[in-house]
Image (cartoon, rainbow, N blue to C red; front, side):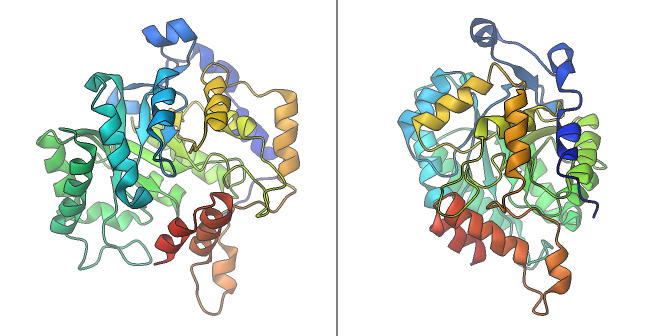
Length: 350
């Protein structure tokens, strides 16, 4: 897999950013006109979304989510397993107070797959629907805007008719508006394959300045976006905002977020937030996504640090005699030390 150079990522990430303001992906709403919030269209869904959204993986703080909504964030992303279900419960209780068209709610359900992301005997409509119905009872909604198949890593799952037909039936029944998937592994392969189908409305993908396979990922994202699939970026801070497990070296998170949004094929990003300071920093990016020279320099400098996120080169897999899933182990390491969430790390590794 071709790796990007230390400085090349700036060219690949920022190319075209200056044209964003003139591009049709930059749309406005009454709120945007009041606050100059930058909006983009989420692919074929037609949804106009602020460029910064809320990843509610680590927060069950309704006051924080309420403040985010007050400041212009509209898309909130959760999952069946986040915080043992408390993330969905909190959002369900919060948004009962809001008009249904004032927010966009995304959740995720993980089908049973093997370690290579292939379907197994456990990949059944019954098990998937059981988890989905639990999510709906927590969220207290008649429908969710986007349902993601969680942690897609193998395009063979696209041909698993029981799962795909279940998704299509949920959409037909009005329980979900749009079908998507999230991906943390083999993203270029999976996204490229998704663009050749008519199944997917939205893709939620890992995307940040430290990934070793950026050229391949950007090519796949462009193909999917050109096919009308809305692209949402996650893992944008490349490890939770710090470069070391002792949390003495900070990532310039504003720069990292702006770098992600310099790609016009990314409709919105969902940084995780756990406090009001993080919210305030991210809200500023709603109105200004242009990287300053100092911010570019900070990102380049941080590439000299090991970081807390696996870059995804996958070279270790070929060299490991035990054939361990080292990228998944490193992802758990990031959850434990970057996100300070050992429970999530434990859940990932089973």
